[in-house]
Image (cartoon, each protein chain N blue to C red):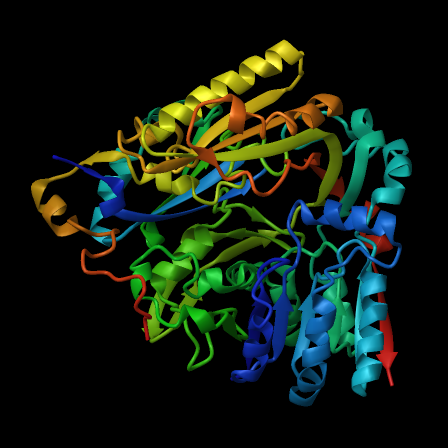
Amino acid sequence: MKIPLVHLAHTRSGDKGDTANVGVIAYDPEDYELLRGALTVEAVKAHFGDLVEGEVERFELPRLHALNFLLHGALGGGGTVSLMTDAQGKVFSTALLRMEIEVPEAVAERAQGRGRTPSNYDPTTPVP
Amino acid sequence: MKTIRVGSGQGFWGDDLDAPVRQVEGGPLDYLMMDYLAEVTMSIMQKQRSRNPEAGYARDFIPLMERLFPTLIEKGVRVVTNAGGVNPTGCGEALLEVGRKAGVRAKIGVVTGDDLLERLPSLIAEGHELRNMETDEPLEGILDRVQSANAYIGSTPIVRALEGGADVIVTGRSTDTALTYGPLIHEFGWDDPDRIAQGVIAGHINECGAQASGGNAMVDWWTIPAMEAVGFPLVEVSEDGTFIVTKHPGTGGRINRAVVTEQILYEMGDPSEYITPDVVADFSTLDLDEIGPDRVRVHGVRGRPATDFLKVSIAYVDGWKATGTLVYAWPDAADKARAADRILRARFDRLGLEFDEVRTELVGWDATHGHLAGPPPADLPEVQLRIAVRGSDRASVERFTREIAPLVLTGPPSVTGFAGGRPRVQEIMAYWPALIRKEAVQPHLDVRILEVT
């Protein structure tokens, strides 16, 4: 079955000129290999479509259960040239969290709800 | 075993003003590093200095030091910062005045020589082409539009200033990471690339402030405690380069494996090749251990000898831009906003306005995820139309700023949110990354010690 990446991994992104970087970190180290298989350069490039004009590069950090992607030509020229709200790619990685990933049922069950606020969460209550 | 504590006080110019105070007063610390510079900051500072020769540095640093100087001297916490921007000397002199008024005895180290703006014509004449790292074009073609040019400098002048007894070190475009590992090289006398590379990752963790202690952290963010008084990260470093990321007790935030991993991946390129002026660090073998509450040990980073080059950050003017916004309300908010966008673009054509790019986003629907957001929900309660233009013809951009407000009475209904006045025309500062041989910069680096007596 397919579930969105948001339940399997957390991400962080930033910029270098017109290139956005997207770091993807497995919530559960067990899922790292699964993500390595699913998040190929081709699959990530296809997911973003015309949001990424240039090449996609991928680097592996197995000890951190993480992958790092460089998305070239993703920031409308980057820096102060870019007309995008997210000119520095700060939230670019969250668009990858929408990607649907094929997983075994047991993984889907374990990952359910991960990465989203619980239904009883109240943002107005301080966290001590 | 000797341990050195380097704490982060600012992650960018505009960060939490009280964070450095919490970092210095909240517990033991040896060094406070403060990063004020980003790619675009130098050109802003250069512009400020062209209007006022005494400006051109991070002004916030001065009132901060008015609050902190006596405590820093009393506790023996030394400050390393790139607040000097394009005018480290002006910053150092302002600081001297602060020190005098506060009645402290202190030494201020001022590092200069990273600023290449005045030297560009002679550097080019000597054969330094400063080709754009992305396009491979030589700098000469845009030389007359360059606003700032600074070499990213490493630990050498910081170490020299510390050896000279400086209590506060003000630099220009030091790399963000050198503000942390400079003091470590000074304290431990490291020359082994593996240890310096450990120092680099310590610097990378410190350089964005609270982003390594719970800020902007994704994992269970809703459970991270007391973010209203978040403790900024600090590193406790041993002689062998191993270090622990932590924060002072009683402060808010969270430091665990997930938070530190996110910061490590921030703005990461090839993790096996993180190039700095002092070493090429390889993060691919890096390991993290959670060893206690808010304590993560970092080890396993490898280093290779540095390259023969320094990176140069160049900013040049490249046209004009402006951004206008309007808010459309339910019902059919997205349809109204898109129709308004079409009408506006047709008016640009009728007026013969010339732009290199016109970009439309519907904030509340597709501004950050583009087509991945899917079609707009049928019952979207409201949406902000955000339309931005850029081009080399200033008059066209100027005219654009006068075309937004008329839409309120000449376009689709239920529109508001135009209280802010006309959009502002901004000059675009484009970024030109280049490399330069070290020997063209290193001999020009200078460290001056100013004494407050």
